[in-house]
Amino acid sequence: MEDWSKNFFEVIETAVLEVENFFNEMAEEISEVFDEWGKLSEEITEEIQINIAAEINEYLNDLIDPTIEVYSDSDVETQEEEDIDYYLVDRVEPTLEKHPACRGCINYHGQVYGGNLLVCAMHPHGVEDESCPDWESSNSSFN
Image (tube, rainbow, N blue to C red; front, side, top):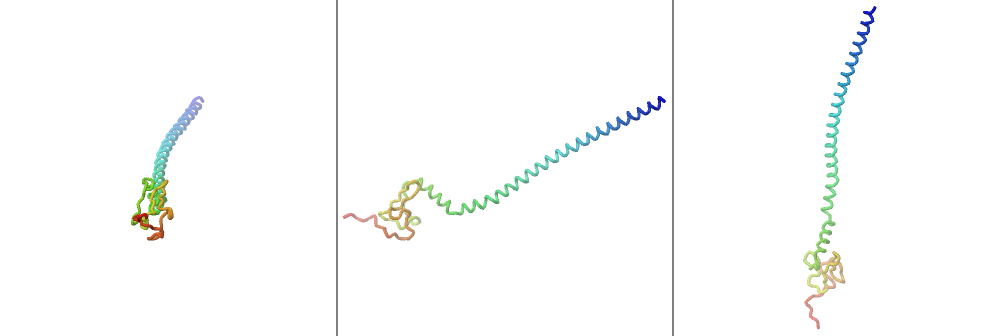
């Protein structure tokens, strides 16, 4: 009977070793699968970041470019440039393009105060017409 019990325990021991080997191999396989999943998830994350960044840039460009075009086409920019120019000068002479009705007028002031041009006392911003009802020659002689 001893042989029977000895054989039984050998079979049990062999079965335990086989089960242990099976679980060790499974653990190694699962570890390899998780490693591959980790690499794959890193690649997917990188692709998503690249694609999302590209889409965000495209969206922002689609949003910002028309705004820049509208701003660059507007008179606001021109007005701001004119205001900046007025800050840099003390006196502005009338030209054919700006305040032509004031050329040669004794009432023309043309001084800049705080970035604002004072054309004359009667018409602080100038006249819209080609002639001014208050125009007087600067060449008049005093009697």
